[in-house]
Amino acid sequence: MQYEHIKEVKDQARITPIETFPDPKTAIVILNQHSGKPLSSLVAVDDSVAIGQKIASSKERISSPVHSPISGKVVKIGTIYSHCSESFADAIFIENDGKQTKTHEFSPISESELGKTKPADLLNIIREAGIIGLGGAGFPTHIKLSPPAEFPIKNLVVNATEGEPYDTADERLLIEKAENLLRGVNVLKKILGNPKVTIATKVSKAEAVPILQKTFCNCGDSRITIVAGHFKYQQGDASILQKALFGYETPPTKRSYEMGCIVQNVATINAIANAVFEGEPLISRVVAFNGDIAQPKNLLVKIGTPISDIFNQNNINMNDIGQVVVGGVMMGHAIPTTEAPITKRSSSIIAFSESRCKKAQKQTACIHCSKCISACPVRLHPIMIYDAIMKPDFDKVEKLWNKDCIGCGTCSYVCPSRIPLASAIMASR
Image 1: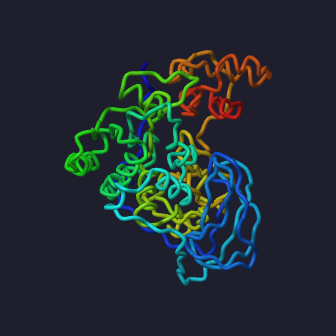
Image 2: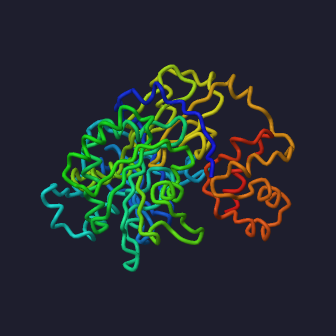
Image 3: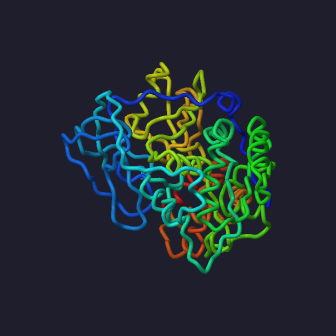
């Protein structure tokens, strides 16, 4: 399989150190940022909350709570646009009191205590800290790390490929937080029964690779391997990455754990280390700020920060911006308003100029070039699925294996007719 080359636009952002962004005056915390059962608010209007306090949760297993990123008062429980669901969603609005009052709900452990800590206790810390997959999917991490006993995990893959062409947040974590990532990997090894560890990254991450080699190769664990390869964008997908590393192909009906493998994103592992050893719930994340802006950068942002704050703080005139994409230009979503907040799944904010957007071609009829078919990394027929969706003929859609789509967006990227193949197929799943 020949994977489509997607040009990277990272030269400036990848060399820019992580900058801590100011806390918002009003944090807007969306309740349902994960893939799973919905949450219920634990607070009411006029309640006072502290930093790290749990403010929404569910008793359902496949769920993940959210916490207050600031201290202050709940001023509203309403709705706001969420890029996670591409619709308006329930949210808790918190007015910052500037006091930086912290909760003491979480008790961290020391690294020396890790060996005698039960995996179940570690999983509970991860759940209570609200950690989900930060690579984009948003699946609750405590569930992903709890495969059925009949599927022992032989391989843990640290996905450090970060294929999205404008995203650099993970790369900066590799450079600046390698020691913390090692702590997070040790937690995962403890939970999963000490599997082999493969750290997969790109040779293009020139500053990060030697830091990873120094940190992980000197840790005394011979079962950790670093693979710096010429990975293409599509190989950042968990199943395709496993094929590149281990040579097997995960059948469409199976999950990674059934192949004895767990794949975890860099940002997720960093959050796990923060939760277990620092007692920090997931209330902030590193976000790449890139695109048609003067100073691309990487920001440590509180979850719930309005995206408009980031543009205002960087003195960007929104009249010059034609479109804002959150979560990567290939797999993310264009947002209709920058009043939408940062969520756990906001890996990046990409701004495109008004002039660039005006130059974008309008959709035209399919010219039967079959580029989408040749480019699909999982060997689907995107235009045939799209045509069946448009009819609509959903029996045919299913027979064409629409559910095997990994949402990489490559079909839309190569389409000369600008047909929204990827978004239509993902919506049909």
